[in-house]
Image 1: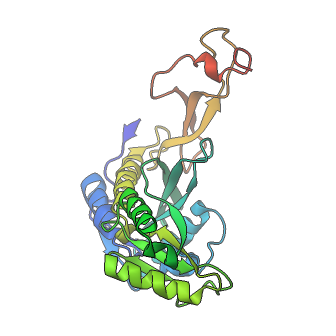
Image 2: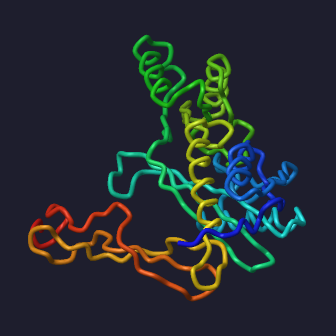
Length: 297
């Protein structure tokens, strides 16, 4: 890999966010590229999708992230823009384990390139819980809720409370950004009163400014993306050289037959057709027989 000659030094990079991401992304741009962040808080990116569900996200997380960056690009007048997007749910291989997927995109209008990186955030407090307000009147119900609140990091991590039942997605009965216990009890009571069943759903508020754990993941991904931007293509010298695909087939340590595990990484350029196959970065050369469909059918 070839380090670029800081082509974005002193250049402003537009970012549209109302969720505090400018603090961590700006630092990464400054330290890694010498670039300056142009924060555009007046742009409402929730119009492209919101965590509370009042606006459904259109397309994939990457597509939504690109749309955010394009919005900042159109209004910033900088020719450069950056954006991030997150998704949360059960782990694809271990459904009981919650996991987050963070995506970040950098657009360079002059070069006509899009550079993106992603991060699987295994450390997340993403969780949901249903309850009836009446259950909190008992000592057992109150204690059970207290255990859940501690597990999700409340009050340092905010919550969302919504009524369950025939309520419109944009209902004012959805309470967001709850950081205080008194406000939580009031929100539960209000949501229960608005729900036909009297049931409410508590959710972790995954907006970055309400969730320090997610903000840490965005910080980590910011520096990962910046390192990629700072890496030039060995052929055309364009910024953004990095991992674009993986090649399966890591041989089994017992029988030597290929498994579905990654054998090699494919690195490439975002502008030209240069591609190179590289060994796994972790140095693993053989798969555990437990992953082999022949040795462990």
